[in-house]
Length: 398
Image (cartoon, rainbow, N blue to C red):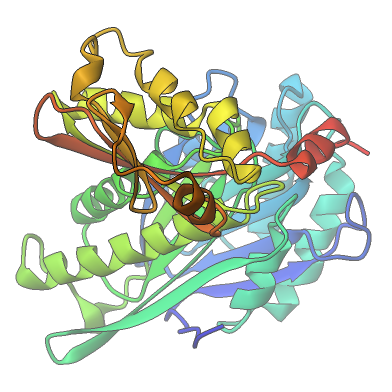
């Protein structure tokens, strides 16, 4: 793993609740400087988890002073009714008191099994245990503590030159399954060592999401806990002026962080053996390009074919044809990792089954689809479906 840059005013610590994962750390506390700004995006799922309800409310009523993020893994605290909400209020109040901050400045997040009673006392004890260990260097431990079915942490850090200053950006994320977010991934937290106004931060966040987690799907399912935070630390030495050249450079770097995290999530999707990029071009408009890209990316037949090293272009073509407006098959062309498959709706004369089979054996697959209808394009990241995906999700609660 490359160098991890600390963020001024951001401290992290984690501990174990000794619940689902035994002695593994699963409870994370992050404290933020009083001058920080926060942009939050949350699940579009109608059945929002208890911590999401409180997080959204608290982000709209932040008080002066330091802030804290409280994150637990193992129990989603979703579909838990009033008891779940009261559990969140309880640990936010008690941890806020211990940290000496307003309870509305505590922002909660959860990930894990849906519908199980939330063991409030155990997670509360873990949060309290973590607090004395708060420091600026606990990034790797933090990234590990939020994992559920992930097999490895997703942690990215960069330092860029902005004028004569160096600005660090560090972020981590988790998510292996139940991923088809309309804004973010299951959980992601990215921190900028700088000072930005709220409007600029929200714009950068929205733009970064549209090119990363909004273009990522594993299985087409959204979680009631999906959350993404972009935080500017408030470091006045790195003040970024709104609409400046410096802001544009910073936005470019933030987008790179989000894209890299999205690629790591696709690679580590539940049971995945391959990362797949579905690139649709020559669409009538972006809405059509996005629709076709997601249809192909979420097709179980396409995903299983890629797992089985089967260059079955007929499955891809059939998925494209699900769009009622694409009614002229003769305009469609398809290639996989540069190998021609379809031209004008038929087998490409240059197609070689031997080379095609070799192409789909690679760990990184690019499916390129040209619709021949216009100039719009859209790319979606996904993964293959293996036997392990079925095994993981058929026995998730055990």
